[in-house]
Amino acid sequence: MREAPSQKAAADPALDDRRSAFVRDLAIDFDRRWIVLTLVAWAAIVAWYLFDDWNRIRWLALGDTDDNMRLAQVRAWMGGQGWYDLRQYRLNPPAGFDIHWSRLVDLPLAGLILFFRLFTSDAWAQKLACGVAPLLPLSLALLGLAATARRLVAPLAWPLAVAGVLFAGATMMMFAPERIDHHGWQLAMLSLTVAGLCDPHGPRGGALVGIASAVSLTIGLEMLPFAGMAGAIIALRWIWQREEAPRLSAYALTLGGGCAAGYAAFASYADRVPRCDALTPVWLSVMVAAGALLFVLAWTSPAQRMVRLAMAVVAGGIIAAGFAHQFPQCLGRPEQVSPELARAWLDNVREAKPIFRHPFRTAFPIAALPVAGLIGACVATWRTRRRLLAEGRSLAEPVMVGWVSVTLFTAFACVALCWQVRFGPGAQMLAVPGAVALVWWLGPLLLNHRSLAVRVFGPVLGFLLVTGLFANLIVQHTGVDRPSRYTQRVNRATGRCMTQPALEPLDAYAKQTVFTFIDLGPRLIVLSHHDAIAGPYHRNGDAMLDVQHAFQGSPDQAHAIMRRHRATLLLVCPNMAESTVYRARAPRGFYGQLAHNRKFAWLTPLPLPRGSPLRLFRIG
Image (cartoon, rainbow, N blue to C red):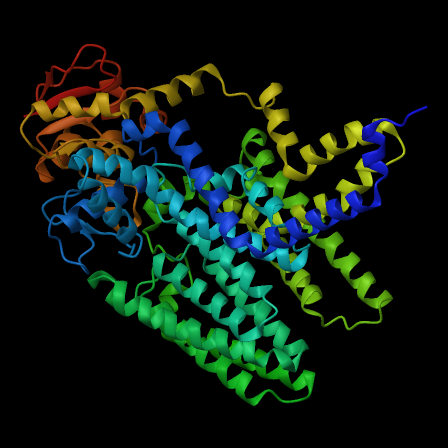
């Protein structure tokens, strides 16, 4: 019987060799071009996001107050406001108030606006820039995680890291179109920090960590705990291995020098005094002193490990004691708000609460991936240790030290979630290397299992567990912590009042100062020509308290506060989340009465388009 051609081909050794050579060459090329291919994947992600979120871009749907304030800040700078003048004059006019950010993140947004102006109107240039700008730091984040996966897991594991980020929901939200606040850039620096920690070339890795930390601190202090942890890991590596001195010295020089350069180039006039909430002389001196001391440690590098440990402890004690002595005002909360504002506002900010203080529906999906990533990092560390011992190799190999660093960093991030849920995006990003290691190890075991059921269902179940998608499925398809009808009504009202169609009709009235809710202030100054009183920023504390006192106090008190701020219009959004707080705290206060349609002689209702979710009054 004649053998089928396909069977002949399958049995042809020469053909098998050619196929093997082709696969081998393809794998080599795939590994060699990992940077280009990662950027190609990033471009595809950008294209998808721009397509999927086009309506948000079209309507300039800056959903967060910080995003609106960022655009207002960029507009002011492009309109002629000084580089070092970060005062927002359209809130609490005429004096305004200082913003504790830096101009660093303004640069790419302003550059994109100027670029798009070449092809379209200024309004559309701003919309397009706000859509594209948040996706720029995603490229750096993907490159950092891909490099980490190549070094620790396998040369061809980097696509799993690129794909893994897409399942980190809290992380990806920070890179979504219109999310122009600075968190995406700080997450990108965090990814590069991890890549630097895992870099086998000590000086290059130390310099990358130092530069990334300096850039992140120049942007803001939100990632200060992660920057501190990265420095602690590098110091511990030097304590354990004297050969890590070049990494430590490169880190010390770039951290101190980078923070000094960042302060000189971007610190505003208001940040040239010893405040605690930004890269001011307080944190600049800490970082420069820490860099100098770490460089001395690396330069001396005594041979005995215990001596290195003692020197590191002494250096840490000098920094801590000097900080406490020179800046005692910064030993408490960096915002330095009044006790009243802390009780009324800061203590109630959701992102500043521990993850266990949040509803299960919110907390579980955030925590699932970090826990899986921590398990994966621990397993990978254990397996690497066992393999090195079996091969008779040193445990000081770069891959082992890299996995220990990632495990410590991921564990720190998980613990940080129990302090503030704002660390969720960073924790999910740090979990990606460990999750990739789990997939790389479990995938072949499940796919090659002798049981058909395991081969079919095992990979699916493993994928859901490792990526944390099972948590999203549970909260979406069960009734656990499902929002009540009242909560849904409040969310709808809040969303409607923030939209462009709702706020733009206010421009039919001449430019004035509008007294409105704190959370509505930044959005109002972006979508209309009017000024507002306050935004949710701690340096705006006195104005914030005035707004709260007005809505919760008596009508006469509210009238007096509005007149003092020279406000001539009152704008409210019934059932907006902030309004429910005023009604709950002071049912008989001014807003409580206004919500029940109480008339006041000094308030005159003004017309808005039919169906508007807002109510507008002239203040007499």
